[in-house]
Length: 441
Image (tube, rainbow, N blue to C red; front, side, top):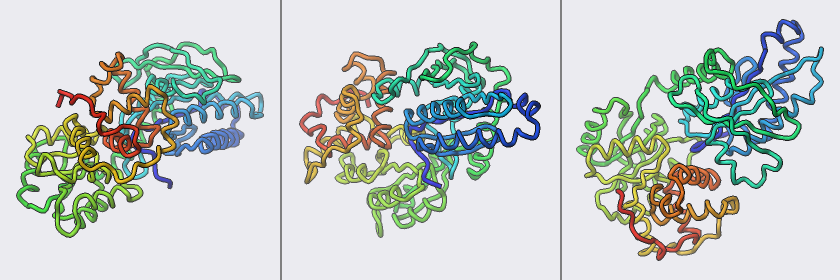
């Protein structure tokens, strides 16, 4: 199976409205109709680059790297269903729900609230309707290749199992039905196909995750006392499990491949194989979903820049307070970069002292960024936090978060760390443009 999308992923759920009625009406022919439905949807999803994660009955669960691919697949699927010659004047009414968010990959499955939110949005739809979350709609606002596609704001709606209402949009497209009754209420949503599929997918995936509900951490350091100290701190946290330890880079690779931890705490300087090279090899391996946090002894470690280039999601000082260690692991595991403004300044200073030997040409993906997104990328590279970017651009912090997520998605970047490194390496930002140092740690 191809490697699943990671980071910011767009999830699509679909199921058939009125399937019980179809079974009663078609009887023996229902299997043939269902097979045609699966063929049409699977073709639309695959042509748009979708990864089929799971199916059950008449429900599909598909993951896409980009929101516009998921939306395009949904439109193509609905058009194909509408044009197909169904028997006995049968109308195949398929509802589709789409949401973009972060989820944890375990093996060939996804875990996380983003999966359930997409399923609940689907369950709120009527047959023939395509619904999007506000997050997905916001990421599509600046796309220039959407053509005649548009969105209708249906307002905030309550979804089953979610405390706060979710703003939902309906996708509008030529040849697709535009008028529908009010969205379905959340009562009984769990009994619908898409919600059942998400629930059962989550149960099956949780069983495959070695029955661990916590964040699995691998501690890598050549000093036994350091490993013991970290283990004592982490063992005291209910949501963190120390999966194992390693004393050098070679052991780290062996244990990381075997244990598949969520986060690897990796010492920079170790015998046999140093932490930077171990990180580079680990993250270059297909199927590895672990995040790496580098451990350093000195505040201005000369290897910080190389560690981040190797793919690390950030770094921590070994003498950091216990709460900073714990919070950092949680932040990285949730998809955030462990890149406080002070850390960004170190990367900038490293460029000032040791600029890249040769400036790379701009990556082709940068052409997909809007002018506003380029501006946000430059401010990220200068070390500004989301709040400081919002103040600089005179927009809300929520808007900034949307732009940051869009930049990372379009540029295929793991986190803000990679964004900073890429911006400097391709010459988008020069070291002298660092600007004032942020005051928030």
